[in-house]
Image (cartoon, rainbow, N blue to C red; front, side, top):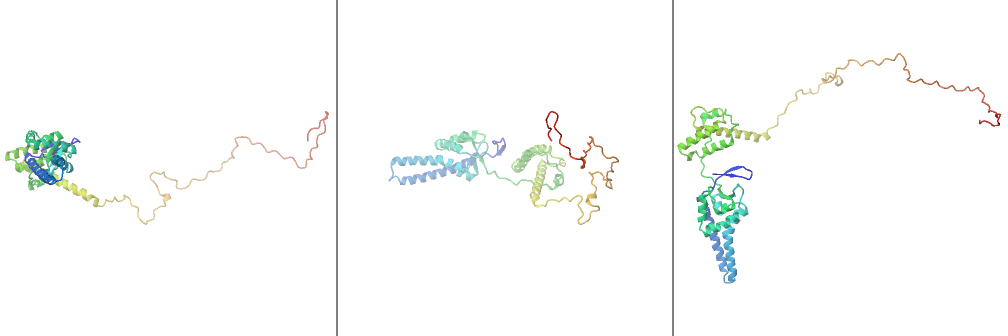
Length: 335
């Protein structure tokens, strides 16, 4: 197992391909390349009597480059890091950050493979794979890739069945503070428990159980072995996760709860008093009778300014005035 840091700074654990599986995949690819190269050479040789010798030489060179370099480059680019041999053994080429292999990386690996396998008979690849921590050959070092295994080793059934004697205790556990890293470590330990020696089983189990007990309460009953303690905690955690997921899956199918009105109005009943007379908690109390009309003022209002008296019309019996006569100066005033 090896840790790969992705571009988002997330640590992902991958299984590095072992040297025997990579060698078997390489032998399958070499066999396919040799068969393809001999078949193409046989077809080209049949045309030797009708074609120019220089043209045949160019065709042979092109076929050799296409088979030796083009075969791994084309297959690994189209299948995201898998040739026929890697596909048969469950291997895949990925970048150092876990992303799929790119064409540039496949081209570097293909060109380096001609030097490593066809020119030097695989000696540089063998030495580099033994020295490298992640089993990289020269092509992987140049291209920045790593070969991982998509098929894990034989897995035993995970012993996550709840021990009957710990079922009642496990139902009272507080698991909200349990980190995912410790739970994953305990799950991996229980998965590989059959492959460990008795001394390693007890030592590793006691260490993981001690780390887990710091986040899980209450403590286990006296005399519980680490293996049973870890099994009970993970089994209870899985049971609660399944119950929560089942509840969330059934949530859209359940009808939404209806909240009854606190004071539903009585249907088809007459109100005890008319609406205009109904009291309101935020209104002031009204007088039982309307207020009396304003009384008439005892004195008429006095005007703010004196009103002039109307002018009297001249009497009708008064004779009309005569036109004035001429003055002493000889002028007659206008009528």
